[in-house]
Image (cartoon, rainbow, N blue to C red; front, side):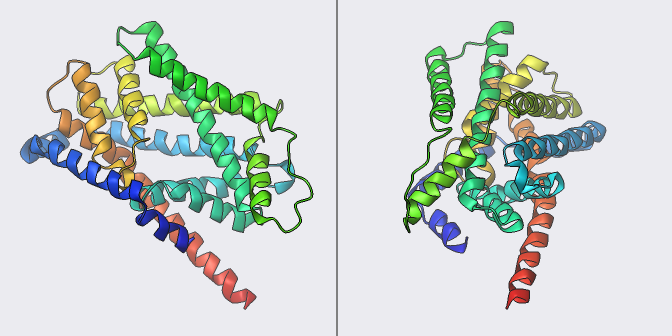
Amino acid sequence: MNKEIKHNIFNWKFLLGSIFSIYLLWIVFEKFEIHNFYKIILNANFAYILFAILILLFSVYLRSLRWKLLFHSNDEINTRILFDIQLIGYFANNVLPLRIGEVIKAYFVGNEYNISKSKVFGTIILERVLDMLGVIFLILISLLFSNYKYDLINNYLFLSIVVTLLLLSYVLKNFRFKNLGENFVLKIINDLIYGFTSLNNKNGLLSFFYTALIWICYILIVFFTQLAINFQLDLLQSIFILLVSTFSLAIPSLPASIGIFEASVIYALTLLGINNNNVEFSIFLHSVTFFPYTFIGGYFFFKFYFNENKKIKNKI
């Protein structure tokens, strides 16, 4: 895992993304007014913020329930453990480069249940495909009920990619490399295929249901956060901000998408014709997810880290 972290720190995508993030931060903070930000915080209704954080943690629990469905029933996965590891992944993504949290999640689950880490990583890839389906669902809702002008070409391209992935999942369902011998690479590919194709008739419908609930939670987080500072956005506007900020996460950046997230929220608000307190709102919205993920996830990370060290010492 240490080698993987070092590799990502010196990865050219991370370095380029860091430069881009710093540039966006400079643009964002050019318009930042610290006194106005303090005023917004002092007048904020923190009951809404608390509710948004509770919804955030509930969304992590839903992710844990969905993730459990993607494992083989014989693995006897504990939802509580997955909940802790999901938060560890968010913590790692907030403090380490290039979303290394996904690799760390696979590492901890693999060690905890003695499952191939590449199999676990395959389930994480499938999770991302389900998330993309959730994004498409939100886009369709926005197209049906709002007047926002989306780039339909990009949306169709995005939909095509997801459909291709689902078809690939179906094709690979029973495909495995045989007569592997000592070929380590082919074994990893087989494990990835196993994890990626774990969606079936039994867990498919429930997985899609959890996906819908997860994205509803994300909409409510944006909505209640803006209510806390009386920003006067409706649900469709909250969905639009969520979509734009979600797409921005695909851009290589500093950990936690610092700079890029704020710039994407400001851009979305500008498209909606909102030009007051945009910078302050973007920072406030980012903080609602950043601090709970970082502090709670950090606690679980060190808890699991020290437990892993104890296991190693006991074996010795």
